[in-house]
Length: 302
View 1 (cartoon, rainbow, N blue to C red):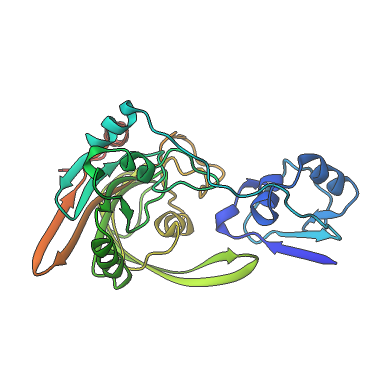
View 2: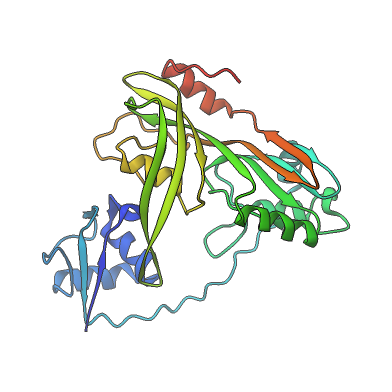
């Protein structure tokens, strides 16, 4: 039996062994090495090493590989310390009877899972702010993306906000520092983004409105307003036009210089309407973001 995968932008420049684990589970390294040596796993019909990087549109073939993942996908428990709780409480922008808005740090997940330990929901479960209720996550924000994030205090408010997001009645503005100088100062990014769900190929339309705030030959500061809400949408779309975001290890071009440990993508503002009342919240830029702006000679009037 032959099983094959085509590499999309999500996995571009990823090691072959990592790619395989993303596709078929926690396969032992020894088994990968054995199957590569015997030609049971091939990349573009060739024998390669496990450290070989896969690139866009590569074809990975598996011949008679019968593997069942033994590990169970139990959620990792996280018990936040008082220091972590207080630190995240200090990041609160708005606190009312219905929800809080925080300026999320880069490197922290919104919710826990099989891969994530430190996460906002588990942190705020232990906060006195949610003493008589529980925190509800109502939208997504990537682990490595900083900025505005909403947590509901009541189930009814969580359902309302989730519905507003689904109906695109909540408007988000991001700031990103990307490699190189964009030709156009404003416009739209329209893409058919590819993803896989349990091996099934899915193509989704993605649309983002962009405006260049400042730019030079080395870098550009962009304002991004996503109209659709696809996974890693902004990162994928900027990668597709050859201007990947600084610090993006997943969607990057091979020959780029100036690596950053932090992803330079910030959820800057969120706007919505509830019962005819306007809500607008902004998240201050992280210091590392401001430092890169300065080093790249980019101006932003906050």
